[in-house]
Image 1 (cartoon, one colour):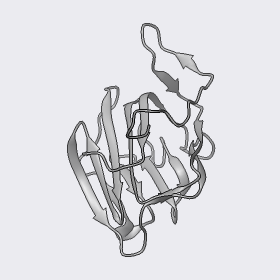
Image 2 (tube, rainbow, N blue to C red):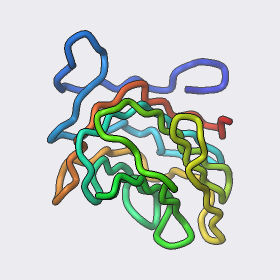
Image 3 (tube, rainbow, N blue to C red):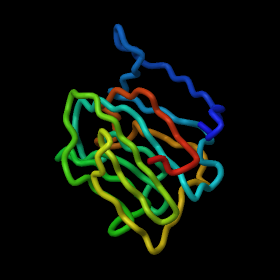
Length: 165
């Protein structure tokens, strides 16, 4: 969504909708937000509500991969996001909770990335090599490969072209 409130793109998917909710459950499936990162942005905020139902290394993965951008859970419930391995990414300071709705915000501003869970900073990183996000097209929440199922409900996915606070 742009600062003026206009939407850039709407995406629809076929999945099970939970009774009495409007969230989508991706147990053994993934989804794609097409062309959302066709351009490069110096600032960006990716935010969503997530209800994880299992923690495995690299489940709930999104992004084209290390060297560009990736986010995923780890088997201990921590969440990792960033541009590459090492100092170019964040792993949350505390574990997330299974079977509970949690708000995630990933804020990228130039060469800095900060991860928030329920409004509280879970860590940040500054990269001497990477800056901004984009230029890769689709944001794919993958569903293929070992442990790469989403195993989560998602709701209110928003991507902003500026660093929200």
